[in-house]
Image (cartoon, rainbow, N blue to C red; front, side, top):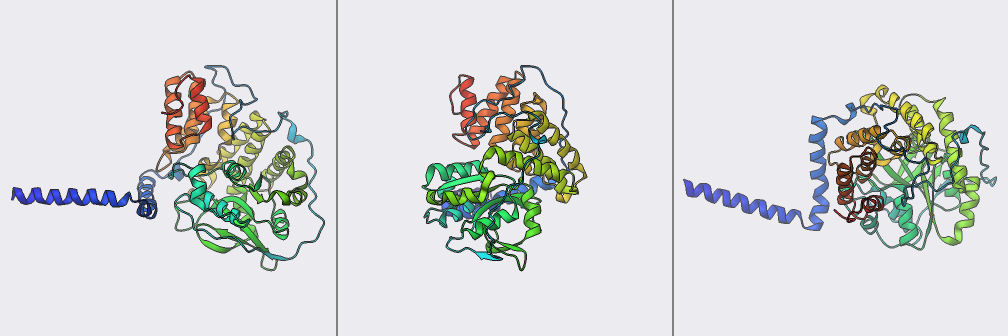
Length: 429
């Protein structure tokens, strides 16, 4: 009997070892890993429903150390690049940009791109790959992901990371702006430019709201729909104009246009004043301000959140913090099934606003709640911002630990590297 038991255990152990080796074969892992992650997430979210978690800002200033200067230190890819402006920058009426007076057709459908279905958490690289393919680029999403998300488990690729990839890894150019409008998308389609937009996404098969990229490649005014190349659902997805307007709002109407250098004059002529980032930020702040007077429900939450994001770009951190406070105050009124509880996976504006107004505990609390709400707490930006706040409060050991964790999940993450260097430490954990 004892021999049988030992044989059974040896066979079981062998099967487990073989299964582990088989699972770690790259082609197998790429197909199976997402199901393992999904199963883990379902268990975590069933035990601790993330939509029930509410962040309540404490407000006030934590003065354990000096409050940082309103002008951020230079951290690559994260620091606003426009000159400082005063807190009343958005009080002056912003002229509405005039789009090209040339009439555009009622329907346009671009062709010539290569559709790609995304790998797990890979909608950003997959969508960018499709946009690049339109201009003859021959790589795929995995080439992009190697640089933009060296950790395959990374939940998100930021727009600035996608733009940086185009600028540094291809011969093409890219412009990223906020405050986009439906007519502007049509202008680009009519001129032969597909456009990447960042928007909200939800469906019955998903566990709540999440962020998603779409490549917009056409439109048809007779049916009021855009055509999108969706990396998850499939090619030539039809999206209603009103749907795009509402779900695009969740990301401050962010858009990216990829183009060859010789087409730059046309891109700039379509953008008009929006080609200037300073104008674009002010225009979008006014747009969000107007929407806070017009919307309700979840859309109103997004309008206030966007207003905070735009004021961060304008370096009005006090105004931004107040706008985010208003957004978070509205959050509990959103029905639980509609709450965008993943929003801090994709947007870091509240960290900027609270940190640069000395509200360090709010930064720590927000980062901690964001990480606790994840099935895998691997968001490098949250660890980074929590480290900054901990350091400002004098807890240097905790700050160092979070910076090293940030680098563990995103090797080479430049802001964390620079901060560790300020502590006189090695740049890798």
